[in-house]
Amino acid sequence: MRRSERIVRLTRQLLDHPGQPLSLTEMAEEYDAAKSSLSEDLAIIRAVVEADGDGRLFTQTGAMGGVIYQPGIAEADADRFVNNAIERLSHGDRILPGGYLYMSDLLAEPDVLRKVGVLFAQRFAGEAPDVVLTVETKGIPLAVVTSQALNCPFLIARRDHRVTEGSSVSVNYVSGSDRRIQTMSLSRRTLKQGAKVLIVDDFMKAGGTVKAMKGLMGEFDALVVGVGIFMETAEPEDKLVSDYISLFSLAHMDEAIRRVVIEPGNYYS
Amino acid sequence: MRRSERIVRLTRQLLDHPGQPLSLTEMAEEYDAAKSSLSEDLAIIRAVVEADGDGRLFTQTGAMGGVIYQPGIAEADADRFVNNAIERLSHGDRILPGGYLYMSDLLAEPDVLRKVGVLFAQRFAGEAPDVVLTVETKGIPLAVVTSQALNCPFLIARRDHRVTEGSSVSVNYVSGSDRRIQTMSLSRRTLKQGAKVLIVDDFMKAGGTVKAMKGLMGEFDALVVGVGIFMETAEPEDKLVSDYISLFSLAHMDEAIRRVVIEPGNYYS
Image 1 (tube, helix red, strand yellow):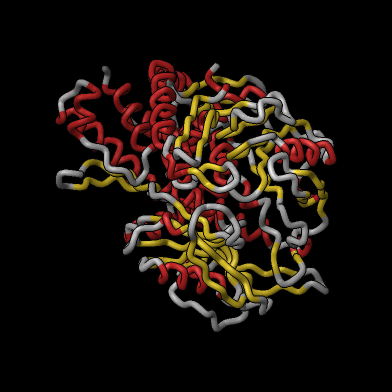
Image 2 (cartoon, chains in turn purple, blue):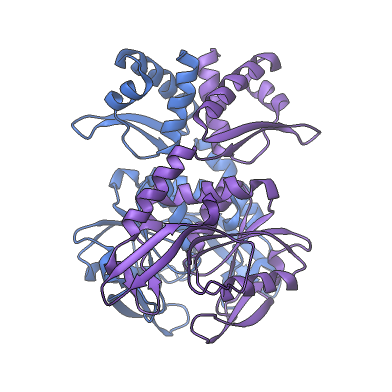
């Protein structure tokens, strides 16, 4: 196989398996190539990825070791992404009853959603989460793309414990914004004791829902290693949770004059 | 830039934008390279992708034209995937009340889920859907990965029309399996008239839910160009919809002796 062909294959293999160690020994066999040649190929790929600033290629040593590609977004691209999203979301006709913002169109676009997943993965990969957790419904797409970028599975807490998934653990909580008592539950067989969990959600006001997810993880003896929020609201300033990362902050929303002000979240500070 | 570096960049750019035309003219500017050199690079990439059988690289002519990467799965890999999934799903302890099967763990694994999205995309890319539609909750991850592989947005029909997304269109339907009357609704602003829609869902028994999604699309004057189901049940044989593709078929399930028989769906026939 020519070097250029091998580089195409290697690049694809790495990109298709983000966060997953690929063994140099196995690749050498698969490609019928010397390990030294593969190392040279990987050096070229690493140089490009690092020059572009949108990802990392690193080597894990040990028996389970290998080369790992961790997707990322270059700073300039992230800036462009944030500014573009702010511009698109800052429209009065996005105001929904109850202090919510219509964002479903944006979060349904493959490119936008993929970038959100990579931004969360880039930030939390170091915590090596075993699983990404969210609660239905709108958090699910975020959990899926973050799970893809981190190469770990995701879990969906259900709002309806009658859903038939075998025995489950439930927590009741009061939603910080509308003071209603709600239920959130998770199938008992889904999570191992001691698992490291990354929580993601699309929208956070007071933080009641995220706090409930943390409580639920407590019931499973799981460890929450991070919280990633797409859009937080500036008000109330005192949230029920601390230690979260937000991509955007809804600074101000005035339905009467149809004005929406969105700022970058604490991700970038 | 050396050819090998350019090939890494090109491969990444194509893989990160599946289904999206990349302009040769723009790439030539971005890479400061002659179009003829880029064409040679692309020929190498195409040769590898086609030799591996897991995707296609094709050229779209015209003003909006360019090079498009359409992800795919090689036949041998698809076979392996199907056999592995059947083995993992064919366990008595997966039987859930009401004739359902516990599949959430499998469909939450990034690799499995990504492959399902690529299989659907590979099958339906030719229909050029504008949007992927599903209904909450378990269909959502499938819609997200299919949307990623097709590079088109997705839509989530809600089961609760009180969800605040502005004015919505609702349909009532009788679920074929448990005879309850259910509601499904979609925000009015989400879909353009005449849009081509690919419906995906995780599980189909009689097909009442899919039929309702088709009815909902009728209300929007949208055109359903395909239906992709992860797991159908062999019974009832007479479904409420025809013209669907299933990846797997639940041929037999006996709770008493805890036996589950799964077969490949009609995707492969």
